[in-house]
Amino acid sequence: MTTADVAQSRRQTVAARRDPEGTRRQILEAAIDEFSANGLLAGRVDAIAERTNVTKRMIYYYFSGKEELYAAALLHAYRQIRETEVNLHLDSFEPQEALRLLVRSNVLHHEQNPAFVRLVVFENTLPQGAIHLMTEESKAANRTALTIIDDILRRGRESGVFRGGPGAPTALDVQQVISALAFQRVANRATFRELFDRDMLGEQESPHVRTMIEDVVLRFVLADLAA
Image (cartoon, rainbow, N blue to C red; front, top):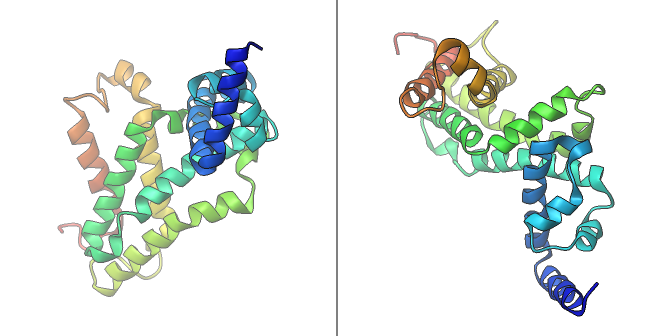
């Protein structure tokens, strides 16, 4: 290591100590990009260091190994979408508008974060299943999704706008539909475009597809479909 390298390492260490949360976030963002492109096995910590102003040694200061870094990056990606939902403050909107805004936010988040989609696809291909999400921390971080939907459905049923009673959609049902449609639009873009000549993210088709997804979710819960 040259004198310049040593000096740079020291500067990075000082910067990291001044803003540990910012440094950790920077590492996780770079890790999402690297692992979403190459997976856990082929993803390189060296490449993550190159994407940031953080040394490899500093990365291992925050994370004990590559797999721990991968798991933390995956959880960070999920937390980002959950934080986006919470920040919508949907309890201040009427139930129908709140649900439409929630769907719109999910659709746009997936569209703007294709690395998140690729990372989730990779995790689902593991032979052991989504082992890096089998923690109480991961489950707790995602409970807000169901809490928000449950509140919207409750308010909608109380006002008579949404279906209630036996067979009515649960918060988990609605979350599954939203996730499936928002995810499919990004994950299956290339194959759907080639097979059916519809680019779901293209300038021409995107507005129609986004509105269609919102309408599908609303129709799933409305008491009066004519509404």
